[in-house]
Image 1: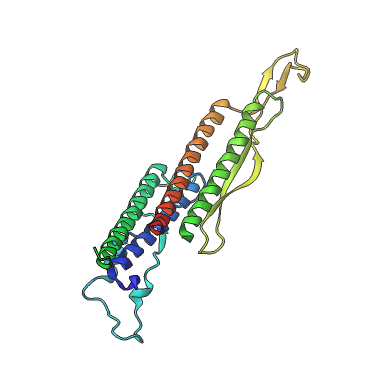
Image 2: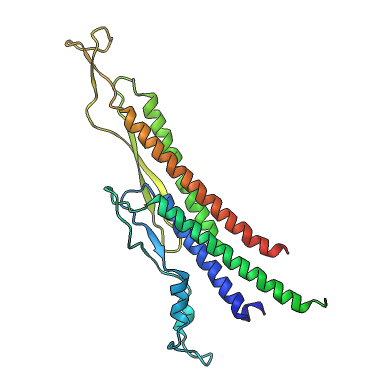
Length: 129
Length: 130
């Protein structure tokens, strides 16, 4: 029942995106000294969502319609474009990875806060008081 | 949730690799005065087994540095040759210490990521608690 409500869906997707981004950042961090390793990243939640929330997108109006937008939930891992490589070919910068990690964690916290407050609203509409 | 356990796995592999590197470094430093000792180096590799599993770090085989050993003049040394020189180690303490500092920095960064993933997982579980 809850997954039919848009805001829960959105918060769920946001938290999941933050989790996968954090995993990518952890992978970069672990490979900070591996020669030839390229720093990786996944696209922002905004760009992932903006792609599916535009007005001129295809819509699935029947269950039998193919909806490519529903399958685009998994973000694509790509090499980070702005990274500058060390002499040994490694392009991980610990400082920027730390920053991305913190931003992923903040995004996750934000998603959970949205989820929790919506849950509180829902719960207060159920209760008798 | 599997993303978090992936992140924890990766961070753990990073911690293991860095601590092994630190172990070899301290071995080098301890043997800085051993005659004929060649410094050991290890390389880091990324294991890529499939697209689903993350790139764990593992350490490659231990190699010895093949650069020239330092020739030290000391005629009283038992290993000295006719000219009075003997071969020391090729450990440069400055390099080893700088490397150790870098390993420590990476170790702490991995530890921080581990802690962060754990906090994220915990706050997710806190949703269930109320």
